[in-house]
Image 1 (cartoon, rainbow, N blue to C red):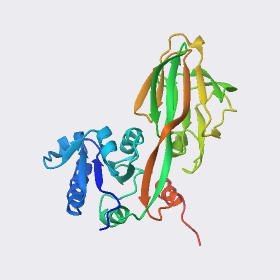
Image 2: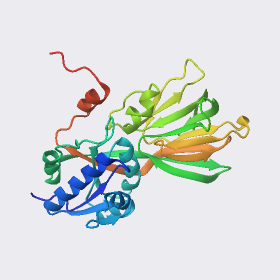
Image 3: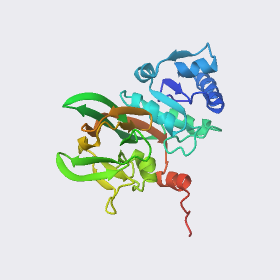
Image 4: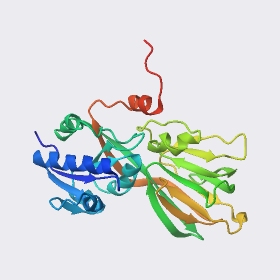
Length: 294
């Protein structure tokens, strides 16, 4: 096999027997092909494999040409927030449910992966969001998101009040359960469930989707991907606890009066796909869309 990649990292779904089995198979198969294989240290402890070199997620990003994520989209999101800081290609083996971001099947992955490893693949870059919470002008917390950043109350079904600014221009005030600011990648996730449109991944755009707005005119809006979105939580809400959720994984604490700035991150995720992958075929498969009639 002609090697387009040389050092390959493996990341798995924690405490998942199927994912662990797939990683063990991958490790042996890649080793037999002559690749240097590194395994993320938490996964290696579960595999109890003493033969593989184990590293942290950041170290994998620094050393690998390609990282294979075995799991669902949630595992890919967690890995992507770290790996996007490095110039490393990422591909997924689906051991989850929908699998919008994970292309390879857990069974019989070898033919498709062999072609990718030989250089037969397509590359796309997915931009991330950077969410920052400011209090009295001081940065209190920040993190990145592949799918979405969401302002919401700390308690379920608790309406909040906030203002929305786009590039410094006031857009509107809103009473709602929260606001979703989503990338095209996240448009098939939380934003879709809240009634947002699907954005194809090549678009430089974000979609803002209010959650259960207390207004019949509250509708999603698509804005330029380079725009800065500012959400100001109303100071009239007292001491009510608020949160900014990044991909549903990382939570930033916020309070009434805080400013939440959401903008495009400086780094992007480099995804690789088997040659000829169709995004619309993925949508048909995952969302149950109708096939061709003629």
